[in-house]
Length: 383
Image (tube, rainbow, N blue to C red; front, side, top):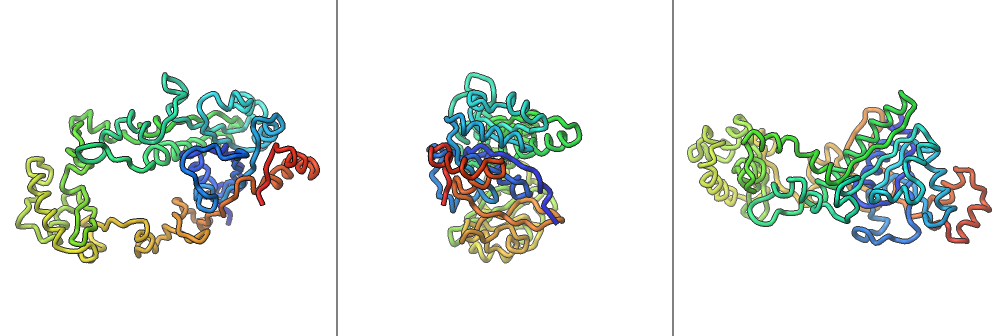
């Protein structure tokens, strides 16, 4: 059986961060995603060889000069036959190109126009550059992460991917459902800054209730509590301990053989946290990560080894659920959502411009016209 988004066509304007992540997510679900690449690398983000650009998997690529009217006409034609467009330029860029939602929805009233900016559409910083930790800095999230000292950058998982990329994908899917029933497309907007804030409802709620302090490393989920942090083992590795609930904490203490030293009734008493942490630190250093993993394996103690990117794909649990796949000659994360109708099958990684001729032919351009555009530099075809 086909994947759920089979037959859905998405145009992705090449970008970094949330937009390619969103496009990958939609492609993993079966959508036909055509990425509109520039003729030359824009110099954004980190240079990545196409063979290792995992977020490009399953997409087609057409390389177009958007400074040429012929190139803009191609992209406009692409949008006219698509179900959705996703773009991550600074506010106003698509409008200046003549590819904004006012034009696109006039050409295609059913189109879903998904937009993701850094700071949002308005405000004094709307057109300023930034990256993940900049947007997290204004959300309240970065200030709440980690122990005392400078907040640690949480890779770009919170703002780019969890905050903006996932919200953009969810918004586009919701608008696609609406378009199918109403016949009307619409503009869907999010931003990295807005998406990061949107991940914080529980923490802001606890702060409002007086159950969360502004001091980093002083709370139940930021490493302040001894029952929710990582501990070093005898071999210099780490175990992640998270027995939050009373019944799981009891199992944890029993397997740690610390029932006589730590009072489970005072688990949430902050006055006991320093002494409890010291006991646990000493205990965890008595065995290796492998030894502790054997102790806790399959239990309700909520303790797991902290594995690096080499070891994680080899863990029996990850292998059992197929969390990783071997593709392109290396290991990469498998699609994160599974459907009963189809097995996850991440597609190949395209070279920028690899599908230019095919996509243009599908749009109705004759072979000699395509060849002329290639010769004049309007488009590029990768070989």
